[in-house]
Length: 431
Image (cartoon, rainbow, N blue to C red; front, side, top):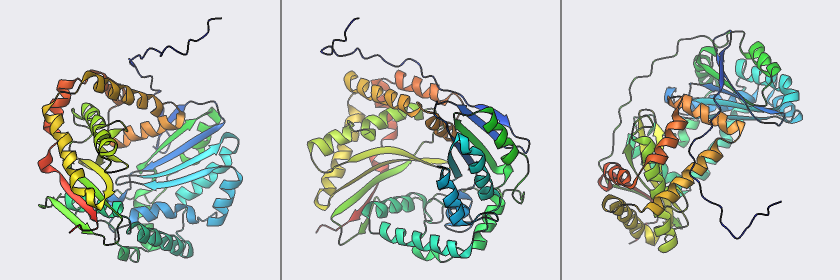
């Protein structure tokens, strides 16, 4: 037997292909598309229901959020307590979440109890009653959390950035205030539920150790009858973006120990042909622990414990944002160093060694992101809800491998624009 010589570093090999498991797709009798990702050896599955009914579609602030949140708080068949007790008894876990465009219901279940947990989920989806007592408890809990968040400079700066990049009449900038919680009612939630939680507005994903019996149960329980009022979903009109003319927006927080800094501006969407390679530039600039921003501003200057840059996406647009928290006295030098790093990317060519490090990091993250059934389910839900092509993963791999230093310099000069960056700061004013 040949022993491994641990004094010799293993050869680093570039990933030349990525083996993504494509989901099987079928259409259930009631028209719902079902995507199946058969992977994993453990006797557990994850069921995702995706509805196109996020805050972009609401007629009043918080309507979409609380419609989704209240689904588990009582149905015609089960009370809120019964839902929690039964899911706990069967070792299941239920997650409810919503985004700007979509609402998600996610169930983790042991295979042997899938029939029982699916019946509970079916009741949650098809017959919620939005009970008054539970509604008031949920509202009060969220108000308290909102009050806590409004004391955090990062929360304040993030909201300020969105308001100034979208305008307060745009859904992305028209953010909820404390008074808006008092305007939400169970009837308002029922109205939203009846329009958007229908079989015609739903997609289903099942991942894990998916058996034929599990698929058949999904078809019988979720895929046979029509649910929801069947109301035609309203067409959403285009929303007008109003960008603030101010370069710097400051929110004073007299008791803040640190200041939050958000620099951002409108950029391209995921569908733009430059986006896959722009990801490489943004990662190198501020997207991982060894990035330019971290190496300079954290490691060298010591202005912050962490700083990062990334892309955020909203309907019809993308934002490039830089985020950090720092001692109040370091706000100006930190921003100065951010601009210094942008200038360097405009003028200097990235070394092959640094580019290779970034590529290897990104390729490793790709492998880790698609190694389990549930992460694969996340990936495919992301592709489908973002309107991306089926070969997105292969294109991403190819873009990382093909991006060179000259391309990074071109992209930096095109998309890293100091003049366009809004400087949003929340913290104590330094005299």
